[in-house]
Length: 395
Image (cartoon, rainbow, N blue to C red; front, side, top):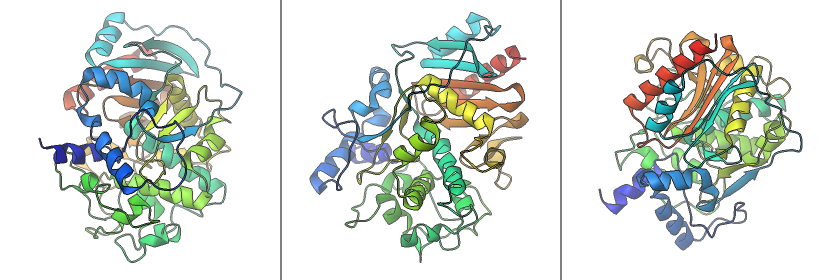
């Protein structure tokens, strides 16, 4: 594969851009000059093609390689008391963790820890990158902004909050259709295609003062009537982040800290990577501790009372899209949450990141991993099989 294709493939990774370790954990100020921006994009080409040793070394230390903002925790920590040990054979857990390069796994039931494991040099005090698990965090900030009065409704047109999209394929598209990836705007998410939209969206020069995501997304044509077809589009989650920032006039990191990290008692600061304009890449790129990922699952399980509107998570975690055979029987997509059979739902990211929530059992299962490849049906099937064993043990 050529260097150009490597670069484009890495940019496909939900728009991640990076720098070397000279970058401070908090980056602010004007956009980078062209030379620095080009350097950061080239550095970002590493991610998809790191070897296993590099994944193990970098996934828990992304702030050392990329610019970003800190999501500040508060002084009060939401307790996670120990519960009865989950009655599952170690022979089911340990081989799975070894085969999938799992760095951390935790199972909560009724808010109590029933299983907690660390490996590969990771521990409770560390942070691990989220990849697309961040999408579910971003959608939750839409609910918070609605409750706070910054956004009127998910039925509002996107152009009300991002007027730069007027006259584009996003005319007439609602916030709900962004959340459910049913805008009807044409999009290609093929990571192996150097001409795909997800590969090209950060590869073009951006006009002075323009948001990189908006500048690209407004060039896309309409392919289907809004609300009629589901197509997975990382670029649209990045638009959701732009929308929340413009509506609240706050960075996503600051708003996440204000609405969830501090009041819900997260244990550690989180880190959110930023793009070449210094804005959080809202479709990916949070770094969070294992227990705080679990607390986010508990927050969703609780319904987010006082933070999001009543009924928000009931809608966000119910399939809101037309029937899509590719997602399988009982599968679907809500507001940036994957909907699973049996009333379960999940936040899922490449390389083995996941938060599974089973409301019937009041169960949260989190895995932080460094899979040997970004995606794979064999890896997903094995994870699903372990989920089933853990859920059965939690009867």
